[in-house]
Amino acid sequence: MRAFAKKSSRSPGMAEPIRVLSGMQPTGALHIGNYVGALRQFAVMSRDPAYDALYCVVDAHAITVDYDPKELPDRVFATTVTYLAAGIDPEKSALFVQSDVPQHTELAWYLTCITPMGDLQRMTQFKDKSVQHKAVNAGLFTYPVLMAADILVYKAGLVPVGDDQVQHLELAREICRKFNSHFGHVFPEPKPQLSTTPRILGLDGKGKMSKSLGNTIDVLDPAAVVEKKLRGAFTDPQKLRLGDPGRPEICNVFTMHRGFTPEDVRETIDRDCRTGALSCGDCKKLLATRMNDELEPIRERAAELRADRKRVLNVLQDGAARARTLAESTMTEVRSVMGLTTHGR
Image 1 (cartoon, rainbow, N blue to C red):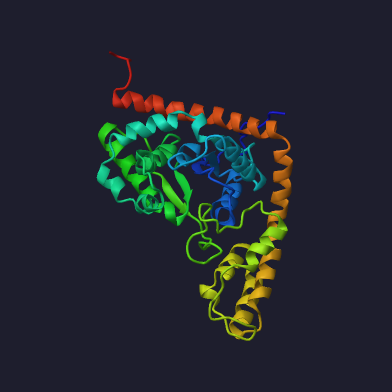
Image 2 (cartoon, rainbow, N blue to C red):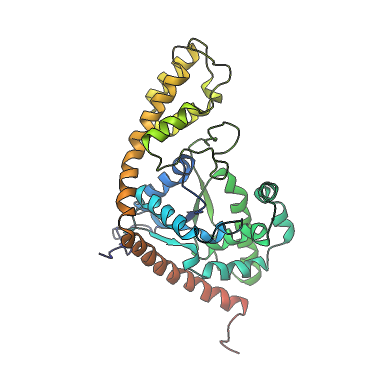
């Protein structure tokens, strides 16, 4: 069955849905930071008639650093499976691979031609990644322009982003204003939608949870692996034994509880941690239970999807077809206002 086209669920008189665009890189297994910070929200918005959501696997962004081309297709497939297993509804939103819509990279080049180098040199993420990688390519430098193109080619009004992408989105807004000022109004100015979930650090507690740093709990990790990883997770260094008072406000394990544990239970954990009645080991066991309760249905759906590769690829094919239609409509307008057309010559 190929019934993955977007269906309208709006009643007459309802406001037009807000166009939403977001995506993640297929650079490895998606982790719980991705899940609580973005993917969970993606799933909710994909089913909400107030939004016209498009979600992509941004493989063109993933090639800005060294990668194995033989592994990339499998990583794209795995990321797509996790998107779907987490609850993104392909009947009500478009799910596709970035490179299947060439209008992204076409618009990126046009936008690059109006983006000052100084604006790109100020991007803190480029500075950080330049330190991490021996060979820094031009793609890594112009990454934010491609991100701007991803958004603007669909005239997205709302972009769910993490706090590490806010600077890039602000640049996208500046590029949007510059283009409209120079060529005429084509693009609406996109607005960010920040996650309300606190940022989860890596298991070592030293920096962000990152696939490249190997300090993650992955969404599809088996329950036993989740438990094992949590046992070694960093906690309050002053709480060494049962009876020692803890400080939940600086404990990364408690931050994870905020992503998975109901507020009333968190209040009890907070109290017992501060009094010393709750050990770090028991706190981690409680978290593992809550985390596995939520993730187990996702793991089960992922296993079903992996076994039905054709279905997953059909979702991507249908999503890309819709995305290309929208993107080409925008690009026809862009080429016209930029003079990149033979019409009228």
